[in-house]
Length: 161
Length: 164
Image 1 (cartoon, one colour):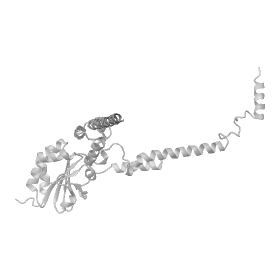
Image 2: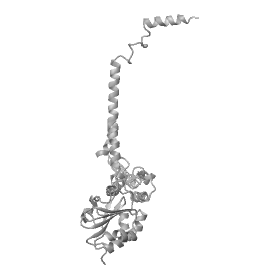
Image 3: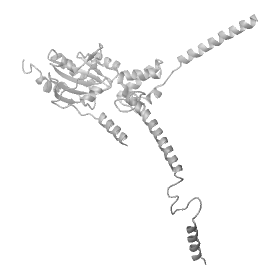
Image 4: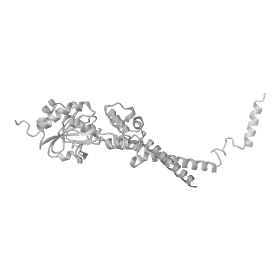
């Protein structure tokens, strides 16, 4: 039992060390890139995405982002640094709070309203017994009426060669 | 439909701004100081003539006019006049390096998100606004100023002008 226990303890320690090594390697790996950040933030002077901008201000902003990427900062940290420099308008995506939240909520609310309206419409249509005009002069699913059959026969007889 | 039209109108109205005109009150929202911490405002200089200079470190013409502004400040700055720089849409580190490089001694405020530039209705940098002691705009210069303009158009308006 003792050798087995010792082996189990050693395996546990080895697993823990390997896990720690993997975690630290992951922490040292670059977390983001200039191209990734540039597609999510704006050039405030140009009013376009940073990745599309080549103005002097955009070049300074890209150099700033590159420096923070080289320092190993995460994407969120770099975005926070950009907001501290240029304000929230530097972010290309709307924020999840305040008035910007409407950019996410309005499409969802509109979709839900559309689904509800469509459901109510279909239920009313089915309750009314099918498409409008089904009981009028048009053809119904049950076939032509006696009057229509009579008129059809008369027409066909007229064209009989 | 009404909501969409309302949002479009809100967006269009929110984006537009017209340049502050001569005779109008100069916007004076508080802004962070570029160096030293804390906030400052153009209203802090009420009672003095102020030449407001919007600039950015990435702007070529701003580099050209900086020495002229510094010389004008050294010649005329004091209890009745000062140049005030407003660094707009710029990185604070780059802006501080710019101030050191050109040895700018006049006060500097920071307008990172461009809100103050928007309030003035600027269309770029540099732009200069001469504000009188009551806070009214007296001159507007779109583009860089040079020593000839400063001595010929600004200096004569300052207190003590004409006295030797």
